[in-house]
Image (tube, rainbow, N blue to C red; front, side, top):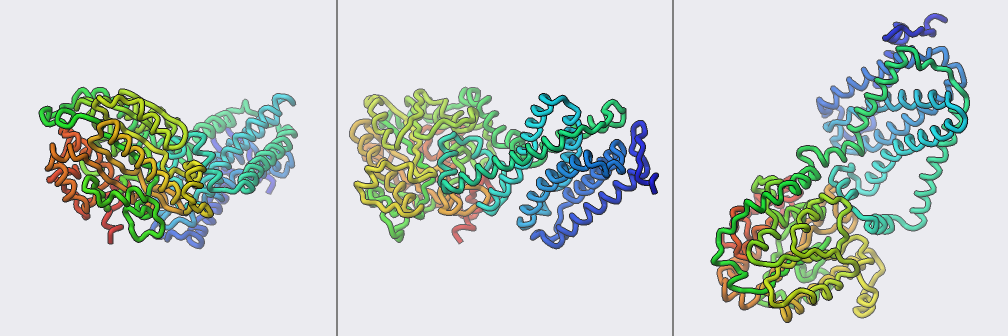
Length: 615
């Protein structure tokens, strides 16, 4: 019996007794995991994807091999040694917490077993192995160095456990997995927006408790690490088997940790078909794309026939369902000015407008380029609207009340940098009015204004004086959202009046980047159609209408048609009468050739049909 539990290390391979013992343990672990899948997962076990099956089998083989080597180099009889046992238990605990949290979340997701989750059950054996080897290694260090290494190792364990904790919190709040588009929103968020989100989602007490809990978690990890590394364990790291196993453990750990959250999502953003890679390619190609741009209608340009200013206002998180100008049945008059001009013949309201994606960066990037959900033009090969306007004879402006993205190559930043004049402004949206006064009234101006609008948190988008002057209720989240819509309505009115009186404004276009859901705000996971219900209207001056009666009449004829805002490139090109080699009239809402049926209209970048919402 004694021989059975004593595994002497060979030169390169685990001992036979250790191989058998590790096989029994691995089979036991994965049999228990299979029972968990059957008994507790919402996703039927019979629907498990073939890739998940293959990777689970691979995970079991890895676990078997790792256990075999550990039993060999440590000796299973040594587990009776309290010095090794304490290290073993600590590392097993970290591994169990990491695996357990992910498994709990996975069990609540329908159809999850059809997805590829196999690597989440391969990483644990490697995590355990690396943790145990590092813990043993730290215990051999001298006192001061040992404390520094223990702190560094504790930070590593803390970050490892923070990943599933964050994943679980996101699932608790949104009821969906954290995907790469949610990560894009996070990494493109500036510190102010992070603070706004946290203070809106959690109360002050909850935030304090969360921070205290995280501090307590790190403290517990650090204390346990100090205790387990204080007692030296004499593993011979010069042994060839130990050296090979240690190198392979670290190699495979780092090779597979990048295939799970959050590194997998981060890498996916920059993979060949990932959105960040598309932005980078656009940035690299945009100058050449502009060089290839040809304006094919130089004699009918609006800059020549109706000189003056064209103003494009991009709203933020405006849901037309809660705007009285678009939804007369809504119980609050959130857009009094827009409602008052709806019957003005110079204004055309498009009631069936949708965002192409419930995320600012993704939606606006496609709105302002020739790439859309229908034409199969890659973003990297697209033309941007600012270059079209410049070649059509306008001085171009980018005036944004939103902070510049912390991701320098995010799509919006790439496009904004194409403007002749770029201003990243601070303050409430009405700040834009003083900036407009710096624009020469005698020039042909193409002005894109990006408002803060109803960006979360809503209460931080509205001056207190506006609330008091209009006696607006502020008792609930919905009240604040309604107030933000009314404030945007006021800013639009001021932009309209100033442009009309001072900038010889020929056209004013307003649309929102995406809509808003009162529970989940705007995400791709979970997705609700009110997240893409957006306002869209066009003002055309009488002078413009006289010069281009066909454009006005076609716009009026199309006011009830389905429209998605990734077609803004064509539609605004149509208003400029700057038909280019990238212009497609069937996507231009101001054209008589506009043709987007309900059966073909898409959102969520082609993943959802608009008809599913209309029905």
